Length: 299
Image (tube, rainbow, N blue to C red):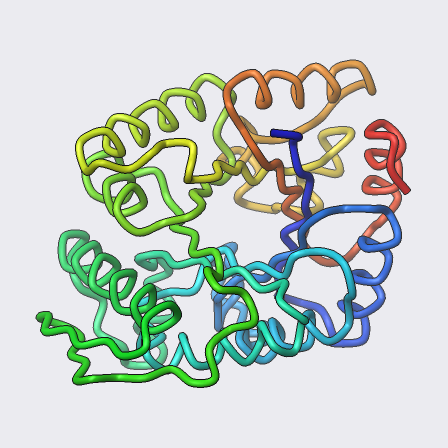
């Protein structure tokens, strides 16, 4: 499989017009994928609340672009009922002409939960919610009707019509938990994504995913694997983009000379990454993306 390259553009501290300009430039540069995140507050845990809403922005992305896949990494099942989300994504698939992907995650930003009075369950309960939501969404997007009786979600002959343009709209699971998250991905996902880990860690997690696939009877090759990485050609750029999270994301950042960046990309490919996404945050500086596109022979 040829490695795909995408851009995961955060929705904090930006405007719709700035995002439109960014998305258009990403498409011009030949990237294969653009995704949004699902946060109501800034993802740097500073408590800042300037952040565009994800489903509406996902729809705008679908309408603004013509070629890249339109992804989400990832929608939080604690915020989004799976039936409501499935209907939204089916519509976004029609808006995009069949280019939508749906990512699901268990959620982690306690600031948002507390601010909006959304219960923040234990890790186990959030994993249970993710597993239930993934099964519900998969059924709603692919089956004529879906019935489900879970602890958190219940469906009774539920329909999602019209169905997406794609017969099997790709469902992604995000996260690296080896006991639950990767097993949920093995059962229900068409793609798995993890952010900001180094190539050896990515390879290890991918191997765990494949072992779970064997356990549940899935072909590991049926699940695409993706890594989100930062792009910062020097340390100042890293700190400007990620602020107080710079050290946390550092293991998964493309940085240094052209040769060092190319070598790092090669290490992720050798570790089994089918897709490499550049995680960007405002203020947008596309010069780094333009430089990377040149190294990749795109644009």
